[in-house]
Amino acid sequence: MNLYTKSTWVYLIIAGILEIMWPITLKYSDNFTKFIPTIATIVISIGSYFFFSLSIRHLPVGIGYTILVSIGITGLLIVDILLFGKQINSWLLIYTSLIIVGIVGLQCCANSVRS
Image 1 (cartoon, rainbow, N blue to C red):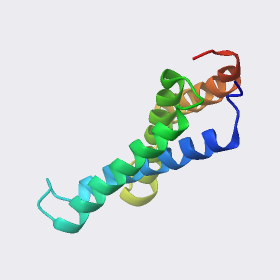
Image 2 (cartoon, rainbow, N blue to C red; image 1 turned 90 degrees about the vertical axis):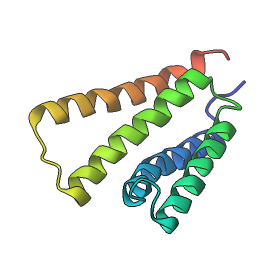
Image 3 (cartoon, rainbow, N blue to C red; image 1 turned 90 degrees about the horizontal axis):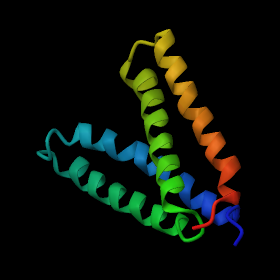
Image 4 (cartoon, rainbow, N blue to C red; image 1 turned 180 degrees about the vertical axis):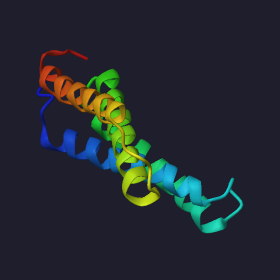
């Protein structure tokens, strides 16, 4: 089984982008009191799970989920910095770099793992 099919990674990246988006819409839903952001949160969350489910057809679920969550964490951190003015410090950069190194490491070893 070839774990490096293009569609597997495309689906996982789409799921990761949606994983970044739903917490943002959740923030704007104001505890589910605003209709449009609430609907957006629900639809985007379902989309994230849908594309993740497509990606784990050929990828072990543990590796796939780790990559998905790592994309979400790193992406949300970038959004926090760029859109919401979160302050950057050296520890934040160090630990975010470790997450990114972990993602690359998982992608490199994913082909040798059997599901």
